[in-house]
Image (cartoon, rainbow, N blue to C red; front, side, top):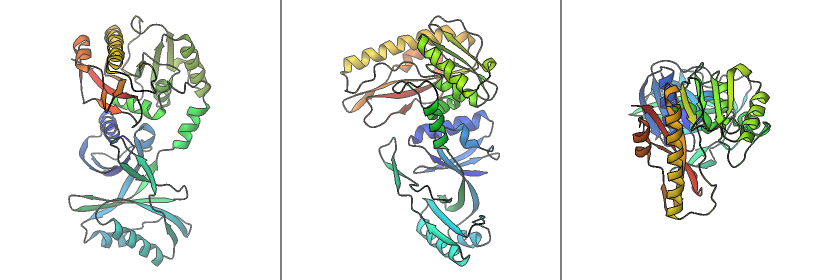
Length: 371
């Protein structure tokens, strides 16, 4: 089975999440092929319904309708239904990851004309600057009813259509409307989902967030029918988390909040850790190298103490973000080798940067397992 994933702005992080998600649900990946922000994924089994709702770094997912060589693809398309709607008006677009993108556009135009559809093509005129500094295309019109794609892999053309799209509007609404928000300190629902997948947490598992704040990561775990334990040394944050989780309507038995220092707290057993500790001061100006190094040393000391305190109760992975601080034209991250050496953990994949171009303090994401 092959599917197309349209990646979010951080391609590397999006792919890492897809790999870990498919691995945790035991759907082995046979092959991955990336072209720009398109990722063709071959898996052993069909994807679960509404897979998009479990992923934070994927814009949309598409199913393949037919495939063939460049010479045969249009003959194959002639034999299948492309548009299944009842309305004779259609606004559509095409995600182009092939050398025959223009030919495919012409084919669709002629095909819809022959089928007497009042079809209007809308180009992917929206642009999003990705982590690599290049611009990815995306739809800019909300009027688009069908999104088709053409993807070329090793001489074979894959034609299909987008079947699942991330509902950014509902995610934003639930995030903006919850009772307690901390603008500058909040982790986005998108990144919270990614951390949960990197930790390989599944339905029925128990999350520990030792820096839970107002419950951003906890809420995403609870929405996926996990249980959650949140700890924070800030009493106001714990009160805010309580209000937010009550507002979502989660069962009180599904989560626990503890107002305590995570370097000393006693906890019950958990499956894995996904957390965003304090990343230091929110800087608008680029710090000196010495200031950045001090921030990172403080972070390392804190995260080592927390991991060593809770690790006996953690069955699986520990996933956390750390400061990734801009100094001049480069960025500094914490000494993960030192953290691993002092805690008895090791990295299971390369660290994953997550930042925006002008952000002084970005994030570096680490995925650890016990030695």
